[in-house]
Image 1: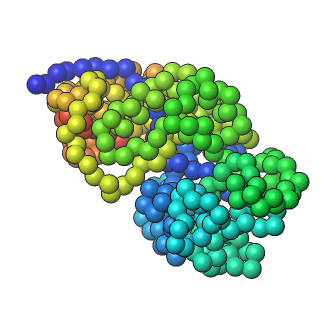
Image 2 (image 1 turned 90 degrees about the vertical axis):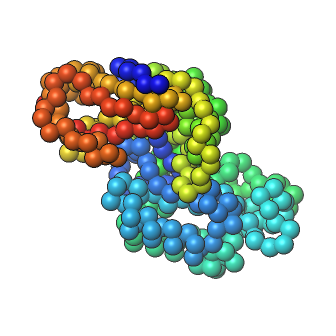
Image 3 (image 1 turned 45 degrees about the horizontal axis):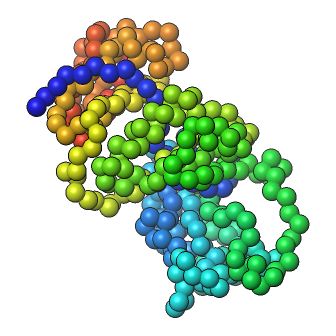
Length: 330
């Protein structure tokens, strides 16, 4: 079954889950941050060696495409010993003030109270930026030990280096909820991970639609811009792709650094569909006055638009598939 559908364009973005990151620009998160997070591949048990190996791969293969953050997810302070697990108590490495410090067996460069200094320096030497996951509040272990609490005030604006700050209000955040936190952060989590399961994929389309309609994409944030975060996009975990989802088709549009236009079509249906966009409609989602003609190519198939197209851009998209155009428009 094949249908033809022309749909309006809306803007949305897909991000990775990041927390508390050092950045070099004074304006925080001017574009959606992208990078790698350790959790989905290693859970809480990642070591310093494994983390730096992944950072090196990111630096060599993905940095040129805009991926610049490497993030240690939670429990980097938990000792990897018999009996320890994600939900166990009493295995954390804390200082006399009850603050978490890296487990020196997994993070040997942290020995002697050096923390993540050497790891961060190595990450920075690769041209990347380093981040960590921190749970809010006081740990149960610190409470049980009756540790004194150091009188600290977390004022991100007074740090001696710019910090990109991300929050995790939950996996079912709403635009109304986000309005209360977007100005206090640069990113905030609104969904669960986008695993290779159709229900996950289609649900992210609904979430991005709602946040785009509420004008929360790239809104004002902490000392810069704030972005709703679709959490992590795990790679290499494949499941049955035959599971059907909700009917429909979606589109995505963005501009590149050199003025090119990226146009994507997504077929959420269980059948093939021809999807089209009017060339004249491209300007509605872009900061330019008019668009009269476009040339370019579709990335996955290699189909080229050599002669300027004046009316519409159309392509047959298979079920649960997508098309991505890189266009030069005038």
